[in-house]
Length: 362
Image (cartoon, rainbow, N blue to C red):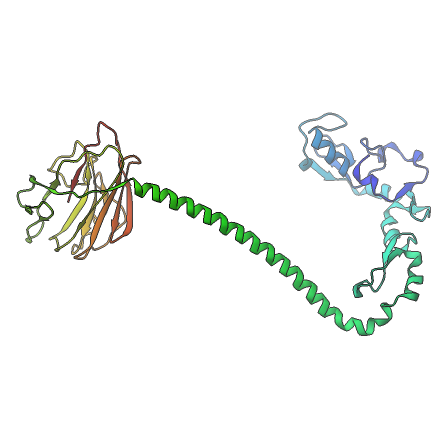
């Protein structure tokens, strides 16, 4: 039987005389809420065909497939009119000869055996019983006669009820937010743990400039801690290489401090085998650099630079700025940190045992 037939509340009078064209092939009862399949034009009770399609996506009559609930459409008005004129008997009060189309009104307004609530239910009277006993109850109801007094409090109680419902909804939202906060806290702790693990693998490098491998116009201090360029403007490829290092694995950090203004700009970065000193670092595919400006107006070559191309990041670097570089040989990234703030991340290609001979330049 279709689900809608189980709760209909009536019986058909002389059901055997009802034509088969008005009956559902699934439940063999007259249609309730009939729908038609758009693909094969067969009619069923809505609840019956929807349950059938959950078991198998095919028409129960002709086996057409695939068939989905989205292909069901309401039946025509003629069929509904024929069904509404069928005569039924109420199973609650046994009244007969009720047109099926009027049965809902019978239940809502007339049936003496249907349970109804007291008219003072809005005043919290809890009585509920058959409609034909309502008049007896009202004759003895202690609450309905007090409506003139209690009715004044109805708006207040409604506001209280509404407030309680809103409070419950707020509690649910707060609980959801707390759950989300707990999840975020776990994520933060996990990220902190990952950062701690990364930092524990980071080596702070104390690099020194090579005493001889630099442009003739660059002066290297005796301790190898400073590289000084002439104050008279730009000189192409005025480089200084640090002592030989080769990092194939791990995280390595080093930094420089700008103690004087450069005539144009300085660059800080890394290069792999293949870079030559006749090129600016960052201007070919073998090197990566951060262009460090302090008084240069051109944006043409600003920011992170690789293979002759620059990223969007640009900022003037005043005297005293600390510029650090964090190289992760395992992940293949080079990240710059300016005065403690992260300023950009570039990817280094071909980090392997064969091509990891890095030249750290300023």
